[in-house]
Length: 256
Ligand SMILES: [Zn+2]
Ligand SMILES: [Zn+2]
Ligand SMILES: [Zn+2]
Image 1 (tube, rainbow, N blue to C red):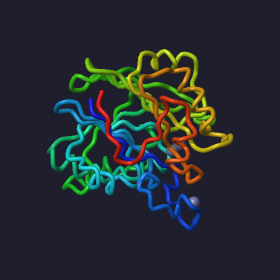
Image 2: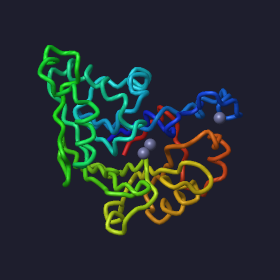
Image 3: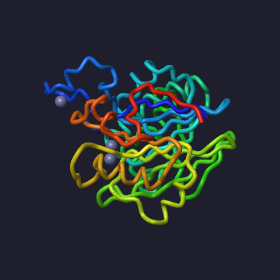
Image 4: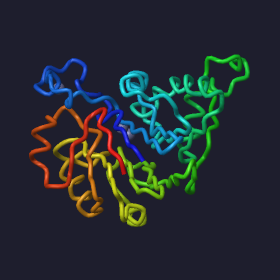
């Protein structure tokens, strides 16, 4: 499995509009953070996790040419408002794409993107998708994708664990609490990617300190924090972290 970080930034993205801090003005490309998404390829199967507002740029910049299924962690604006751009993939591949999420997420997607199901648009111009409520693992092209319920403030949303015969990873970009039963899905991971918003407490996200503690408890072979704000300079944050915990950047790709 090849995993590509398409975006590693918080809801504002970095640079943040109207900010002239050192990180927002930085010329280090590792400080340029689009909104969060990852892309997973295994043989002929290509999975996209979330459709952020930056999706068109992410797809063009990082060479995404095919999407076979989409998984939505939750329907916050920074994770879904690039959704319409997946219509290029349903057009190119001449098929309806399955879009998976929790029942609450799928209900919200149907409401926010109500035009997708409208007959009058069936000539094209809309993403052709099959909204699919997911409450159990699904298997696609030799990969098994399991929902991992987590708390995001008072909302119970999904992260996802992805497993093939080559390895196992988990992706939880927005999270302020992991219920005990969800830790079971995070055992024996090759790669763990977890929300580590910024230094200091936040109501709906793990802080960097909280993220580090969870990553150490989970103990994956490789650990990454994501959904980062402009409070963190890439290189300074990386230098401050314990060994084995890495700060990704947009475009970083790894294989398991
Ligand atoms: Zn988010
Ligand atoms: Zn800034
Ligand atoms: Zn969120």
